Amino acid sequence: MSDGNVLLVDDDDAIRTVVAHALRRAGYRVRTAACVADLDRELQLGLPDVLLTDVVLPDGDGIEIAARLHATAPDVPVIVLSARNTLTTAVRATEAGAYDYLPKPFDLDILTKTVAAALGRKGVKLPAQTDDEDRSLPLIGRSPAMQEVYRVIARVVSNDLTVLVSGESGTGKELVARAIHDLGHRRAAPFVAINMAAIPRELIEAELFGHERGAFTGAAQRTAGRFEQAAGGTLFLDEIGDMPIEAQTRLLRVLQSGEFTTVGGARTIRADVRIVAATNRALQQAVADGHFREDLFYRLNVVPIALPALRERRGDIAMLARHFLERAGEAGLPRKVLDEGAVRALEQHDWPGNVRQLENLMRRLAALLRDDRISADEIVAMLDVGQSPPCQAPDLGLDAAVRQFLDRLARSEPAVLDDGTLYDRLLAEVERPLIEAMLARHGGNQLRAARAIGLNRNTLRKRLDMLGIDPMARPPARELR
Ligand SMILES: Nc1ncnc2c1ncn2[C@@H]1O[C@H](COP(=O)(O)OP(=O)(O)OP(=O)(O)O)[C@@H](O)[C@H]1O
Image: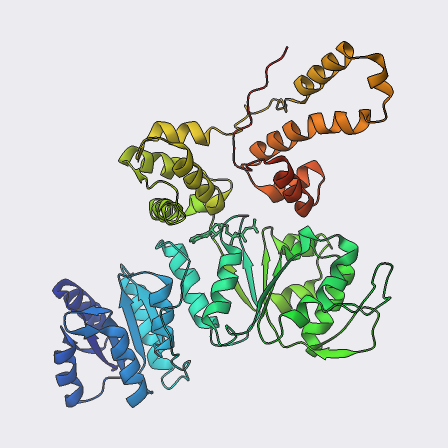
């Protein structure tokens, strides 16, 4: 049995009663305070071994209390309890020197265990407080799964540990990487992203490490790689599972030695970057299949952050949807609101394209609907995009396009057949329906569609721009003539 001294500050009588009871049952001596003034009186009577504090108090802010106590009595761990379950709160609490942050509602068992752990680790050195706290924190969501993500982010912003973010496409992996950069001490230096799936495999090493003049055909001058561009900042290695094995070996060497050599050069440069890698597939499986080096996996997976799929945190959907409608409004699109049925329809959907798909849908609704209120019917109609019946080869609409083309050809002058443009014209005819159908089939996910078609993602993006295709749009119904 512990005889630790706990001081609990919360203006909610029920929370004070329940928490104090649970902690007393666990063997702690508990004092309580309902506001900052009460707390000050209690502190004059003696310091506790652990302080638990709510954030919003009638006469002050619990995080300021944490910072104050951390400055005057750094040995006393502070656990912040908050109903404002945002990344901002988690990060502010950690920066203020709090030992831990527990989102409300919390589990009493977890609270008791956290208090026990805090008592066992008193005197832990915590990150220093930083200056500007109201930096833009873009991650939305209060689900328990996102709370866990915030807690891990809050723990890594003050160090340079390598982070591996995993999650399905569109779950916010890049956003997490940016948040880690923007909140950390490297934020004044660049955040540089490189996507392994978007670069031809043979160019990845040159892109990462730079190359000397003449290092390979077409290398007319020395070019700095992403490691050099990101010096002092953060390098985001997206879709790390797509990295060719030779580049993996080279990256591993860099991570081990802290230095790299440019392609074709004898020059060694210190790698001063924080690495955040991301993957949308199970890297362990890639390791088991021999496609990803196990030693590199462990080097990258120092701090894992697993982002939940949107369907695993349906409680966040309404908040995210409203956030995206608001953003669309700020961007000049008409302001719209969701009615209750619309929210339910959104919450029931499975979101194969995750937050990105929800964001695109909200933007399209804001742009296309005439009504100010969005109803369930409109959501369902727009979500219907590309749902092909199961167990049936989907109709990509290509046969119709080709038939129409052949039809026109049959009706034209015979010389048109031999004018040297047939190949290009036929391709032009099928490209749009092919891309539209494959995008729809993959829920608007460009990476998956590109992979399925056999195109590089960058090439697909360029073609979308060229053809003016909206990746989330429903493909137009093609008539057979
Ligand atoms: N929690 C969130 N709050 C607000 N916006 C989000 C959140 N998660 C994702 N988004 C938005 O969704 C879109 C997709 O996010 P992001 O590019 O970070 O996903 P990703 O997992 O890196 O995707 P991919 O694997 O396809 O590269 C972005 O526009 C991002 O701003």
